[in-house]
Length: 170
Figure 1 (cartoon, one colour):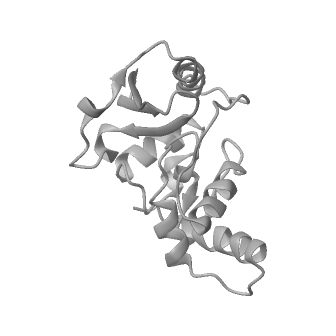
Figure 2 (figure 1 turned 30 degrees about the vertical axis):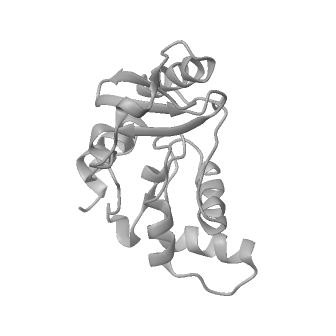
């Protein structure tokens, strides 16, 4: 049975989704698909995975590095799952470029080159924003690009992590 809860953050409401055991989705309102139907989910705010996720988010929004991840069920293609796993390895407060991420994925896949565009598309399919930190991936030359919640939200997330926003270009 699918479950839903909401978290009120200083950046807006975050929708949490779960299969009962694992977190399956974490979306700001700007990231929800237009055809998203919350009525298909059972509201259960005190589900264990939601409690752990809320604790994670509370720490995150205080600017604290969090070490305990909620249990995640990342759905996607095998390629997307490789990308998501690599996103999870980006430490708090650290940034990498799409090109660097492409190099990492290419190495895992045993190929010499990987398209940054393909990486960007996979990153854009990330169902668990913030926790799977796709906002930590930037374009070449400090260009802020490619965040499903919008560049203003990406800027705010990077600011929470202590980045000097004056060095980035939109």
